[in-house]
Every structure is written in C-alpha cells, then in structure tokens.
Length: 94
Image (cartoon, rainbow, N blue to C red):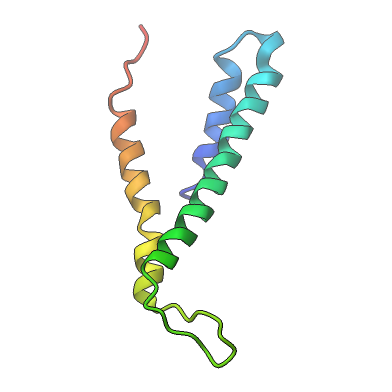
C-alpha cells in the first residue's frame, strides 16, 4: 500500500509531457525509481555495517544484532518523512 505512489508517478509523468515524449519520460522515471532501490540497499548495508558490534560466528561471518538492523532501516522512514515535507512545498499550477 505504501509503494503505490510509483504507479501515480508514472501516470502523472506521462501526462505532463507532450505525447511524443511520453516514452522517454516514463523511461526516465523508471531509472530514477530504480536508483532509489540501489540507494536504499547500499545505504542500509553501510549503516548496518557501521552499527555492527564486531561479533563473528564460528566461521568468521559477521553477526548483526537487532539494533544494527533497526538503526540501518531507519533511513526508510526518515527519507519518507523528508519526501513528504518536500511535497508540501510544491506550488500547484493554476
């Protein structure tokens, strides 16, 4: 339910440009959308590593505690709130 904004972005993006540019507009929006996933996965991984307490299992693999995961995943609600606040500053065309 919270990711359905993507559908609206594609529809609105297609309608905001002339018909002959709609394909390139949708492709550009899709690239931006995919960049978001790459950004979040990389950032979450970096944050989890940063907050890792250094524990290793018997095979030498890192063992992350729940605090590292919780802190790493905080990037999602923080950026969602930031994005929501940024949307409130968009001026509506008359």
